[in-house]
Amino acid sequence: MSDASLDIRKRKLATLLAARVVPVLRYGDAATAAYAAEVAIAAGCTTLELTWTIPGVVDLVRALRDKHGETLLLGLGTVLEERQAHDALVAGVDFLVSPAVLPELVPLAHAAGALCLPGAFTPTEVLRARQAGADVVKVFPAETGGPGHLAALKSVFPDTVFCPTGGVTAQNMGAYFKAGAGLVGIGGNLYDKAAFEARDTAALVAQIQRTRGAAHG
Image (cartoon, rainbow, N blue to C red; front, side):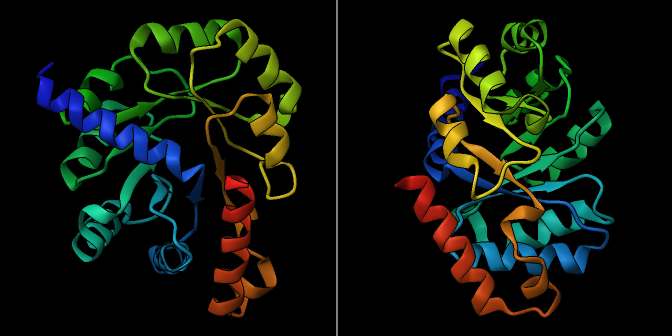
């Protein structure tokens, strides 16, 4: 691994950690996901995770990259195989996220100067993710064990950066941070459902800004 690639990854990891809250966008069509992305960006989010389940997500990655350039740290989640990882990296993502430990994704990401965030839940899975060279370990599904589960993992792996995702909300994220989370992933809970349905952009932006403020408080 070249020093240049390592430096790029270090900068990306610093940006990811500084974000504290990563919007995880999982929608049934690209237009809705694009709207959610622009709302988050308008609210000051510098980091986004799209999911492979969005139809045409690779094209959406390219569109966001073309529009926002390097000001946006862009990730792709629900990556389950090498082909998906390859397509995502070619499209220009900065980090790959998987719900499970797939060791083969780590060298692919690192070779492209990207980060890899495998998902883990048990101590054995966390250890496998660490051994594979994970930059961050995504604790998924977070709500199954809650902050107590994260705290137990952090006590055994104190030098691991954890990102709980799945059931994290603006109301409970403080407990996850206290338990040792370096950052959190928040999905649909980041957006008020009624405001989102009405496309009330101003209300949504204000809501996300409040959540981000609380995360940095």
